Image 1 (cartoon, rainbow, N blue to C red):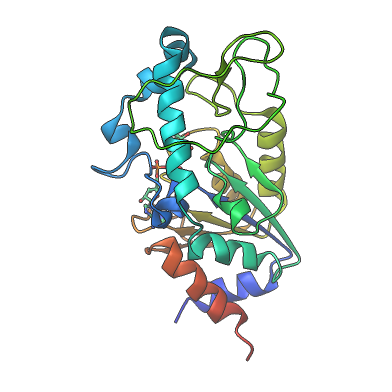
Image 2 (cartoon, rainbow, N blue to C red):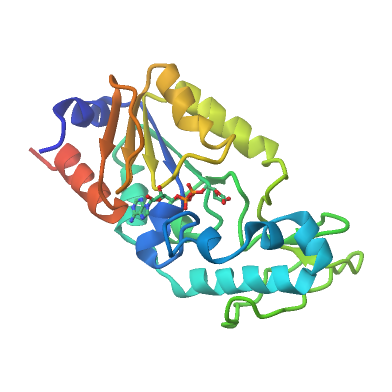
Length: 253
Ligand code: APR
């Protein structure tokens, strides 16, 4: 039985923000960043792969690594957590979905209007002139991680395309972070799913909601510290907790 105050908060919320991190895609087989042993930053050096300096130094190594990540996502499927989030949108008056993830599994699960704070694997742009390519990227082949792949050339200026993700040391898209902060300020309930909450400014979003008197729910097998009132945690995998939460909150009585 879930906490009745949490169920009531979900049933009566006028505006729900769902804020996701890599953990929401873990059950789809997409590696997270900081999980012990399996996280990407446990196995790869972020500084040599996820920075503009790294790309400038070795474009083929960085582009190849992101093509590997794109191929992992392409072979994956949305999991019950993504599907439950898509279903939640039709059960509450207003839902704003904010993700730190660069995969497209929320969209493939049926969620509309997804705000990507850290960019998207499928949206590269020219490293030199910043323009978007005229055509979408081809279906990725299956390079193993670490194989060099030359980035395509920009059709406008001939410069190399770069992954459309926010690298360490780069600022987030202003429209995305502004939209996310406004939604956090206005919502009655924020559900934070599968994030370690260590990367700012994204990690500020649940804090803003809580400070402005929203109820906050953290879904994570390894929950972090709670404020006490109006702050809940389900120490569970998202693919288990979210369907259970929706069933209990919205099952026809
Ligand atoms: N369901 C829910 N949560 C899960 C699951 C699961 N099945 N599996 C793992 N988790 C949790 C982990 O306990 C961890 O707290 O997901 C979280 C993943 O944390 P990170 O790997 O740090 O990912 P994230 O919080 O999204 O990282 C934020 O850091 O490197 C940057 O740009 C990158 O967007 C990323 C940002």
